[in-house]
Image (cartoon, rainbow, N blue to C red; front, side, top):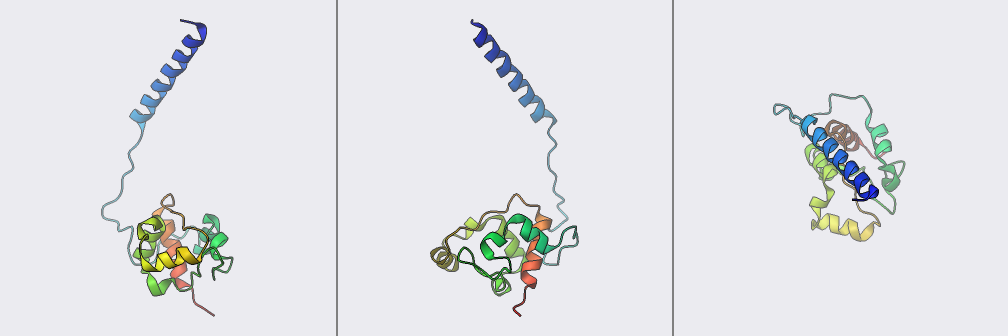
Length: 139
């Protein structure tokens, strides 16, 4: 065995050891079964307001700084015509699950971008975003 092969073997063994230790010590994420993450009531935890979360997640890049739509995404002011809080949170987590829906097929034809999935954002923060979007009123 050459020196290079010995070093590769050592690094591979070390990697496997660290991987096994990482898996063995990983804490499992526990969800509270009594808490309804999709509850229709407004979010109780408000560390950040809806608009700052919308800015932080990049919604304004497609829906515009005023959220009234651009050529990349529709206005968010009409959201309450189509969504409940629970439905909007589910949509934000997995927009591709609405493929085939007539309204979304029309959006695909009209707008130049696809809605990204926000399943990596905390459900409570998505609730705050949904509350904000559903509170938007045309002036």
